[in-house]
Length: 336
Image (cartoon, rainbow, N blue to C red):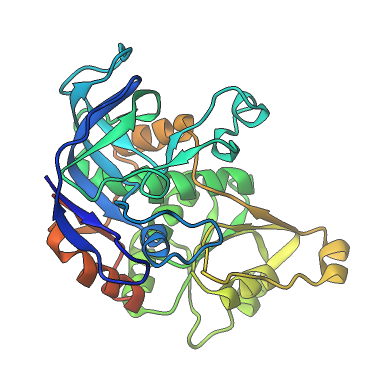
């Protein structure tokens, strides 16, 4: 099989020929049909974060494909099943986080495309208990972005605890943001979408955003406050300034949910304003297996659209450059 491999941080990925891996106990071998490009994959390839992966490794945590071989002890999946392999590749199932429904906070977790090889390859391994079934009729190229971009923003909106009378600001309309707009609309909220490119602002409007804010010409915080302030803001733009602006746009009692992870991300919180206004700043990372099942169910019911473009795996380095330049409309999906 072909695999896109990080050999050295910050260097172009290398396309290699590799043998198919053998599934161990509790694992399955998945023949990859589609695998998305997430900004997290770029951070992994560049070694941007304090906890770094160990080269050589294969990125990709939006892998979707067909089960080809079963490891020992796997009884609930069959050869031929279509599954998705998300960022949360494995969790212990025994710690306080796992037992209380927060398996994404498990200290022992293994992360696909970061701690273990991911889906930018012809095949990949997955722990069967964490491989999500893809509903019949859902295109694998659409299922791939839902496996991270979908479940991450869906969970963030749950964490934000939004309702139908809330104004929700989506800061950054791209691979994640275009899905966040849709989930907020499904919840019945009024949606304000913020971005700095004409194409993404038009996309947000097309997907149902009620207020579209061009941060190049308008101050998003002032626009949000003119509408009474946002009950919640979802920080998806990989930019420190956007976090501060989203915070400033909150109403009293509002919640800023941070999702994007800039390489040197930070935000300065004014203590007086935070206390006086009763605002909250919350981190939200991906979603659980149950969240992903709900994301797939919504899509299977025709309630969401995935905006994507496909590329061959050989175009991985050019695709990364385009994402960093901000020229990709929403999501790139590799079809190995």
